[in-house]
Amino acid sequence: MDIAWILTLFGIGFVGSLISGMVGIGGSIIKYPMLLYIPPALGFIAFSAQEVSAISAVQVFFATLAGMFAFRKGGYINKALVVSMGIAIVIGSFIGGYGSKYLPNDAINLTYAILALIAEVMMFLPKKGDEAADFTKLQFNKPLAAIVATIIGVLSGIVGAAGAFITVPVMLVILKIPTRVAIASSLAITFISSIGSTAGKLMGGHMLLIPSIVMVVASTIASPIGAKISKKLNTKVLQWILAALIIGTVIKIWMDILI
Image: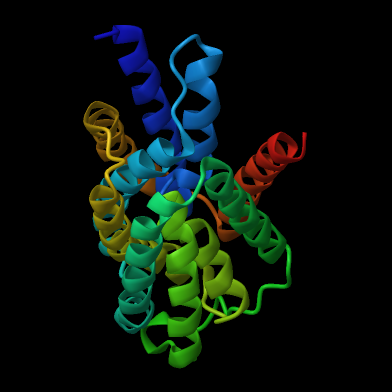
């Protein structure tokens, strides 16, 4: 077994999960392209889009679990929001995760690029969440939350991303959820979603054991660290970090698809 290959995967998992813990995403928004491009750039065998999405699904499961526990003590996770979106998104993510076995690699990459582009556009729309509102008495449109969660689940399940990178903008812009509540709750929702996408990928036969274990170990270490760092940053910084991650990914993926 190549130690350099293992260390490369660990580095990808650590950096991606550190950022995911900071901004409340599962990390696939940055680790998906890193897994696609970094190993072959360093002379290792490239992963297919099917394999990357399967590795991402497993990693997201453990990264969001660790990050969720780190955020739980802050009291920002809204249970009603998690239930409304979580049930819908886990159903959609299983459908997308299992159904991806029938899609070619280009279709998976295109799905990822479209999701990332939508998320980036939404991050720059006017945010309507009331940051000063009492988050313990949060009101939101539950049917709308369930509908968008189902759609996000299907699409994100295809790429093994669990959907947090687009769930956060949706909660901010459409559901008008305060930023810190959206970030903390998205980790719980993403964890639920990852159950469906991981099960779908496993049943689809694309799971890689060693890379998945390495990414999980890195995620378990880095995600709680990122969550602690986030508590020392203000809301605007968190939003701009997420926006910067998404725009970088959009540019790279779309350039590869178009060129």
